[in-house]
Every structure is written in C-alpha cells, then in structure tokens.
Image (tube, rainbow, N blue to C red; front, side, top):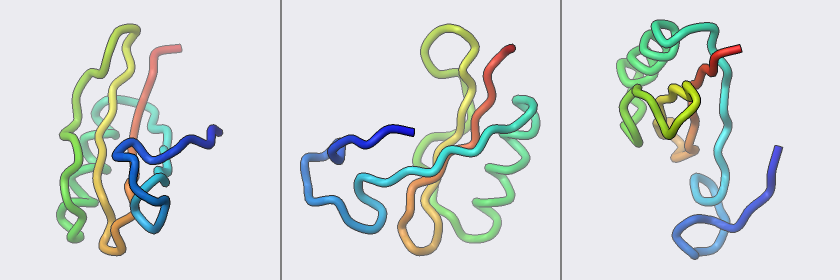
Length: 76
C-alpha cells in the first residue's frame, strides 16, 4: 500500500488520488475481468497490456462512481 498525492495535482477526492489494484492469476483473467467491468458500465483508463519491464500486465478502469481500479498480474 502507498499513499501519494493525486497525479494531476488536484485535490484528493472520489476518483482522484485513489486507486484499488486487484491481483489476477493470469493475463487472460486480467482481460476477462476488465471486459466484465466495461460491460457493466465502467470507463476505460488503460486497456489490458504489458506495462514497463519485468512482466507487469495490467488494465485500468473507473467504476460508475468514478473510482479508479486496476486488475494486474506479475510473473512469480
């Protein structure tokens, strides 16, 4: 867990400065969970794909209340 200032420099509030990250067991599960979130009305904040180096694979979205969430997987 980490606590940081919002990336955009604005005041922390619902959907700004908060992100929940949920681990998945595979890239396929990240894709499946992201697709389900979008199907249920979430908005895209970063389609599933590799991020950086080292095998980090993630997808980002906002729920209907504006909270930013992430599904991710990393190699063991």
